[in-house]
Length: 298
Ligand SMILES: Cc1ncc(COP(=O)(O)O)c(C=O)c1O
Image 1 (cartoon, protein in one colour):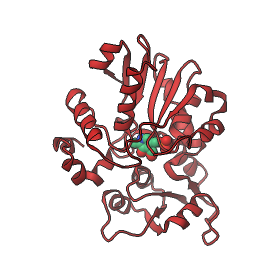
Image 2 (spheres, helix red, strand yellow):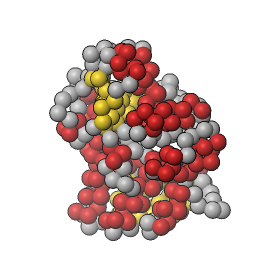
Image 3 (cartoon, helix red, strand yellow):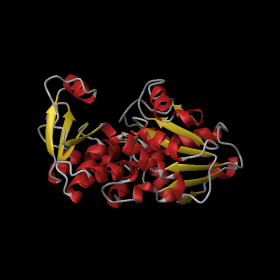
Image 4 (cartoon, protein in one colour):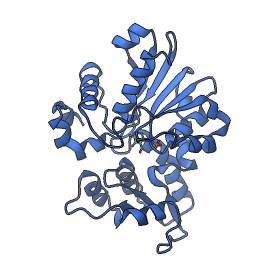
């Protein structure tokens, strides 16, 4: 845990820590490490033939899963949304290097496969079908272990949310005394609410999804996001990514400023990793003023 002390924690009197899950593993970091832990164990224990999963060409899940399967000797088939690129980017090149077999499918077929309604594709029974983002029950179980690693119970938790699996897993392992703030990185209102009510009904009252911090939508980069990444790098030696953690950090600052998180309260921000995603956006980010030194530290 890294203590975060800066101008706003002092001004508003909040105590803030960063749970550095980005440091869990060099390749399988953050929420991916947590989500994959019990899934890989399940495959090994049940002698399954391999894992089939899904994702986009820049997906942190695709990257981390391919690395984890490579290290664990588990065969991996990945269905990738969209056409095969002429030249693979960082994420897909690494997945290939890690031995995954890639199958590119158009967006409509991808949607059908993901929802389990594709008639043209059937999956063998002895492979684990791991949903996009690794957000199944075993994935959430991995996240539920996070609160036990703290020696205190904070009033607030803050983390980035995509599918909502990490948020719900965390809340399942926490106490209703805490508030769990998921910062939705996708544009739109309300899309994670039913997932929360279904996945952690017993603690749903303590979970809030915030929809106003998407900064233009999924994977959109902007000067504001680049500025926050530069600022945390210089002030706290902390590297954030523009797709998930920089948005969550801006949201945390705003929640403190708006006194949703109040003076005297404790808040834990989970760094959910995903820094590999920076490689696929280097030109764009440096064009917006990202400090080049950050790439030397990745
Ligand atoms: C770095 C990072 N943070 C947060 C999330 C959001 O996690 P979830 O999909 O469990 O909400 C993701 C999702 O892939 C991610 O890669």
